Image (cartoon, rainbow, N blue to C red; front, side, top):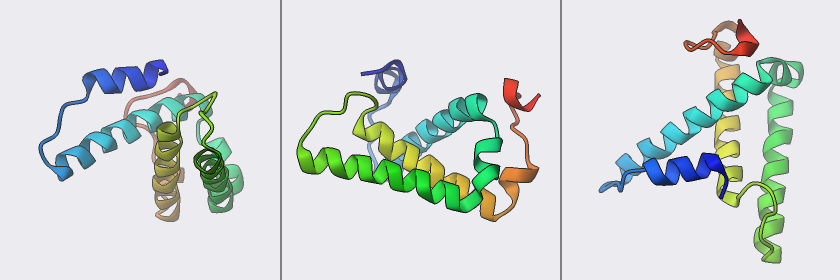
Length: 114
Protein backbone atom coordinates (compact mmCIF):
# COMPACT_ATOMS: atom_id res chain seq x y z
CA UNK A 1 0.00 0.00 0.00
CA UNK A 2 1.49 3.33 -0.97
CA UNK A 3 1.81 6.34 1.31
CA UNK A 4 -1.28 8.09 -0.12
CA UNK A 5 -3.54 5.11 0.56
CA UNK A 6 -1.99 4.44 3.96
CA UNK A 7 -2.67 7.99 5.11
CA UNK A 8 -6.30 7.80 4.07
CA UNK A 9 -6.92 4.35 5.47
CA UNK A 10 -5.41 5.43 8.80
CA UNK A 11 -7.24 8.77 8.89
CA UNK A 12 -10.56 7.54 7.51
CA UNK A 13 -13.44 7.53 9.92
CA UNK A 14 -15.84 4.64 10.09
CA UNK A 15 -18.92 6.26 8.56
CA UNK A 16 -22.29 5.23 9.89
CA UNK A 17 -24.22 6.33 6.82
CA UNK A 18 -23.74 6.01 3.08
CA UNK A 19 -23.78 9.76 2.52
CA UNK A 20 -21.02 10.17 5.14
CA UNK A 21 -18.98 7.53 3.30
CA UNK A 22 -19.59 9.39 0.02
CA UNK A 23 -18.37 12.62 1.62
CA UNK A 24 -15.23 10.83 2.88
CA UNK A 25 -14.40 9.54 -0.60
CA UNK A 26 -14.92 13.05 -1.99
CA UNK A 27 -12.26 14.30 0.42
CA UNK A 28 -9.88 11.73 -1.08
CA UNK A 29 -10.79 12.91 -4.59
CA UNK A 30 -10.03 16.52 -3.68
CA UNK A 31 -6.68 15.55 -2.16
CA UNK A 32 -5.75 13.54 -5.25
CA UNK A 33 -6.78 16.45 -7.49
CA UNK A 34 -4.61 18.88 -5.49
CA UNK A 35 -1.65 16.50 -5.53
CA UNK A 36 -1.86 15.85 -9.29
CA UNK A 37 -2.57 19.51 -10.13
CA UNK A 38 0.57 20.49 -8.23
CA UNK A 39 2.60 18.17 -10.48
CA UNK A 40 0.82 18.73 -13.81
CA UNK A 41 -0.78 22.17 -13.71
CA UNK A 42 -3.47 22.88 -16.30
CA UNK A 43 -1.51 22.31 -19.50
CA UNK A 44 -2.04 18.57 -19.88
CA UNK A 45 -5.81 19.01 -19.68
CA UNK A 46 -6.08 22.21 -21.72
CA UNK A 47 -3.89 20.80 -24.53
CA UNK A 48 -6.31 18.01 -25.43
CA UNK A 49 -9.48 19.09 -23.61
CA UNK A 50 -12.42 16.78 -23.14
CA UNK A 51 -11.12 14.28 -25.70
CA UNK A 52 -7.85 13.93 -23.78
CA UNK A 53 -9.76 13.34 -20.56
CA UNK A 54 -11.85 10.64 -22.23
CA UNK A 55 -8.64 8.91 -23.40
CA UNK A 56 -7.19 9.00 -19.88
CA UNK A 57 -10.41 7.56 -18.42
CA UNK A 58 -10.45 4.88 -21.13
CA UNK A 59 -6.87 3.87 -20.31
CA UNK A 60 -7.65 3.61 -16.59
CA UNK A 61 -10.85 1.66 -17.30
CA UNK A 62 -9.05 -0.79 -19.59
CA UNK A 63 -6.36 -1.31 -16.97
CA UNK A 64 -8.98 -2.09 -14.32
CA UNK A 65 -10.84 -4.40 -16.69
CA UNK A 66 -7.63 -6.27 -17.57
CA UNK A 67 -6.67 -6.71 -13.91
CA UNK A 68 -10.14 -7.87 -12.85
CA UNK A 69 -10.60 -10.27 -15.76
CA UNK A 70 -7.10 -11.75 -15.47
CA UNK A 71 -7.11 -11.94 -11.68
CA UNK A 72 -3.66 -10.35 -11.64
CA UNK A 73 -2.50 -8.14 -8.78
CA UNK A 74 -1.44 -4.64 -9.81
CA UNK A 75 2.28 -3.90 -9.66
CA UNK A 76 1.88 -0.13 -9.57
CA UNK A 77 -1.22 1.71 -8.36
CA UNK A 78 -4.07 -0.21 -6.77
CA UNK A 79 -7.39 -0.75 -8.51
CA UNK A 80 -8.98 1.59 -5.97
CA UNK A 81 -6.49 4.32 -6.91
CA UNK A 82 -7.43 3.84 -10.56
CA UNK A 83 -11.11 4.31 -9.68
CA UNK A 84 -10.16 7.49 -7.79
CA UNK A 85 -8.25 8.74 -10.85
CA UNK A 86 -11.30 8.09 -13.05
CA UNK A 87 -13.54 10.00 -10.65
CA UNK A 88 -11.10 12.94 -10.54
CA UNK A 89 -10.90 13.00 -14.36
CA UNK A 90 -14.72 12.99 -14.54
CA UNK A 91 -14.91 15.99 -12.21
CA UNK A 92 -12.22 17.78 -14.22
CA UNK A 93 -14.31 17.16 -17.36
CA UNK A 94 -17.31 18.82 -15.69
CA UNK A 95 -15.11 21.75 -14.59
CA UNK A 96 -13.83 22.03 -18.15
CA UNK A 97 -17.36 21.96 -19.65
CA UNK A 98 -18.36 24.79 -17.30
CA UNK A 99 -15.21 26.76 -18.24
CA UNK A 100 -14.15 26.75 -14.59
CA UNK A 101 -11.03 24.64 -15.12
CA UNK A 102 -9.53 27.20 -17.48
CA UNK A 103 -10.50 30.46 -15.78
CA UNK A 104 -10.19 29.61 -12.07
CA UNK A 105 -7.00 29.17 -10.05
CA UNK A 106 -6.40 27.02 -7.01
CA UNK A 107 -7.25 28.67 -3.69
CA UNK A 108 -4.12 27.11 -2.23
CA UNK A 109 -1.28 28.23 -4.51
CA UNK A 110 0.87 25.48 -5.95
CA UNK A 111 4.24 25.66 -7.66
CA UNK A 112 2.66 25.19 -11.10
CA UNK A 113 0.21 28.12 -10.88
CA UNK A 114 2.38 30.78 -9.25
